[in-house]
Amino acid sequence: MTREGEPLTVTATGDLVEVRLPENPSTGYRWEPASGVSEVVDAYYAQSSGPAVAGAGGTRVFRVRIEDVEEVLFVLRRSWEPPGHEPLEQRRVRIERA
Image (cartoon, rainbow, N blue to C red; front, side, top):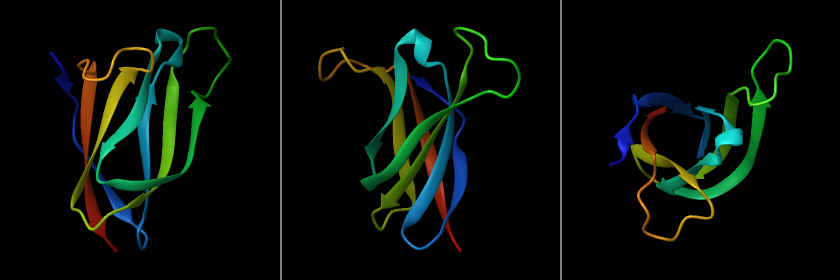
């Protein structure tokens, strides 16, 4: 069963939004947009501050172009799992317009 993470609220700059989600890629699970995103402009992983420790978590940062929506959805899943496989978690991101 997919967990529903705490919803986030971000402010759109034009049609671009930056979304930051906690992630630990050593688990195999990575965030990806599921709906409301028309283009991923940039995506990268930033380790947590402090000493680098194998297996430590960090933050996945997305800069995405959004459609004319009030909410986008991201899912935490493993890339090798078959299509239709339930993600571990999903996170709704509410969009505020500047």
